Length: 336
Image (cartoon, rainbow, N blue to C red; front, side, top):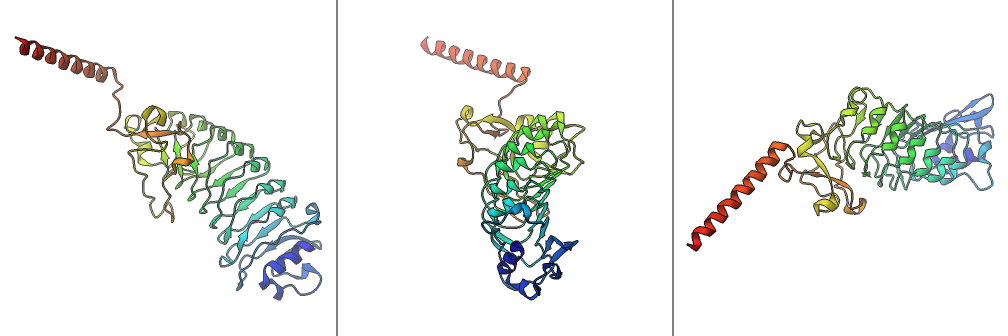
């Protein structure tokens, strides 16, 4: 099989295990079922040389590659390079585990061609770029682990198309923008990690359609404004920053648009909370002004909050009227 031969070339340490022409005899890293290779497992092998992931050679029909699982975690971070675009032709692939390596580059949009894919683990690498909108076509996807990378951009509303998704881990990245209301259609989602990013805006009331156990929705160490929506009661109990959960959040953490305040897109008098050691090993950067439009919501500080209760407004008007009357009286006294 050309895919396995390319793997041995890309990972030199495997040559010592690849004896013979029958790849089912390569039992240290190939698993076969009835004479057909179904899984590649490098996990636990003591690799000593820097390696990369093999490309699927031009002319190879990816639909005929029988490997359904590829695991290469816990190998001392020996895998570097990028995620091969050509793997998008591996239509039988179901599970990819590449956690804790030194992979770079972006998440390939081409991988949406892996129509059988159900589990992707690429957390703990150095991946950059945006989340591919094309991954919305993963109709069988159950888990995506991409935490602890350097991913940027927004959360694609298109990912609401992954209707079988149960786990999504995107913590410890550089993601910005708001929470997509469209994700409320992810009814099978039971675990969502978005903590330690640069996300902003209000928490969408539409997410009340989601149902997760307490502690399974991680939103802390971001820049959210407003409060936890009352609609979430009974369905979601998120982990959030104190500014969002405080009793005074309606007045001290108000969402306003930058255009109405005359401030920059992400300006706020609240400094982003410093992540606790338990929540992240990375400190999340401050959001870039370029990462948001001029209508992005921001927090309004307590000092700048405008009184909204009827009594507060009446008191303010009465004070202004009294001061005006006093000024007029002083002016008349001065002309006598």
